[in-house]
Length: 68
Image (cartoon, one colour):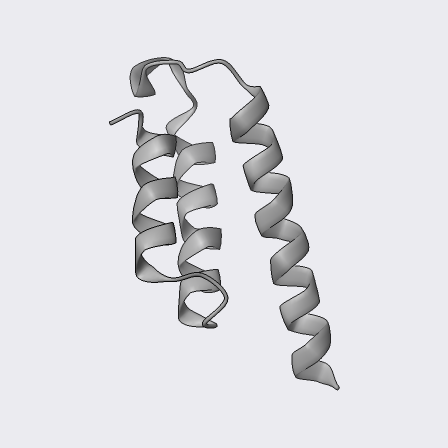
C-alpha cells in the first residue's frame, strides 16, 4: 500500500510540474531561479527512477526546463 501512495504522490508532483512549466512563458535559463529548476529536475529524476517516467519523457522535460 505504501508504494501505491508514493506513486500517487509522484504522479501528482509530475502533473504539478507540467502545469507550472506549460503555463509559464518560455524564459531563458539565466532568468529563471536555477535552484528551482534543479529541484524540478531532481523530482523528475525521482519519477524516472521509480519507473513512472520513461527516459525520453525525462529528457524532454529536462530540456524544456533548461530552455534548450
